[in-house]
Length: 465
Image (tube, rainbow, N blue to C red; front, side, top):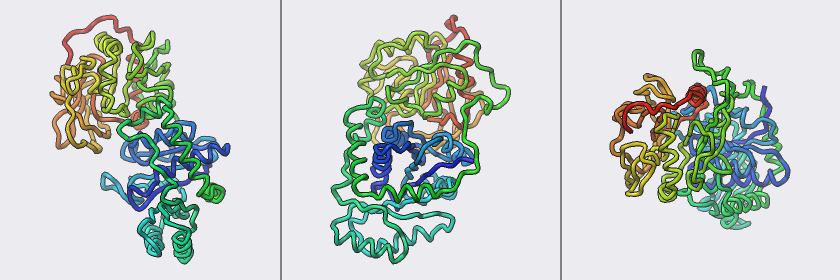
């Protein structure tokens, strides 16, 4: 049994202020001395990072498509262990699903699985008494959903607030806070910076979180929200563990001597989901962080490198300018050490991106284009690699603007329906724009650590992909 006070914050649709309120709520309660944890429904690592910055512990993602619905509650229990409040920030509208599977993947489905009360955040800028009909409809749509109340944003005046509260009182919906139009300012760094401001603990990001916390503390009834969160029942599912005991049988055991694995990131964490580092440590390795934007060398003794999908494409100039690290990464790959990269990490390993020289590990050229490629892919491994055996199936997520030419090497990484093979496998390199959540594939960490522990003195045969 896992007893965790918890709330899910959602909205009728995107743009109502759920992100800022979730961050502010965590910051406000952390400032009061409450141990808090933040979670994001779906694959958005940026929102999760800011939730983590506000909470003072890693923000985590709850994505049924990436990890499987049966792992959501265990992963939540793991990330929320020992906290006084866990806040889960929803995605899109309460009943929406980007993959068209709302019964399993929407914020409402996650809230139901977690047996958590939902607080609906509603932008009322152009709304009066109709707010009652809107909220009543959301509450009535799914009888399994526990809608515990609302927080109103973009309130015009005291008279407007009184009108809204009276209308919601008529349908017996509690109001936990009402924020004026100037009280939830757009202070977070631009999303093009991705998770970088959080990983670097930039002053702008820290100040933004503090300001949101102050706004929420001054407008939201924190004590009543805590009481609602504490009314959530215990979860009858044990917490997830990164222990190798959960790995499929037959995988190679970790080496006797703990190898050193570098994760791309910064002082505030890595570009991977937090579970990646936990799984690598549990598999028997030591983990160190390397910043691809500023560190000029890999830490001494590194035997493997992992670059998660959170690395933003918008930092191509900084990646290219760090020539010494590019050379070190190319040498690590050339000697056969494991190098697993996702997202923009694939572009970093290419010859160049938009005319800027990169690591040159892969014989491919990247080019930024208008628009984003976004979505889940159910992928099949095409080639044997450190990450997976050929034929293995995994669900990953893509979000990128830049593309590589060619799209795949002589030994592609993945294939999926409706697309040609993608990615590169060469020596110990597995490079793809598809990002995986390793909690769904804990054997990857075991394979990585085993490969990192094998002496790689021989240069191998062949040329870069």
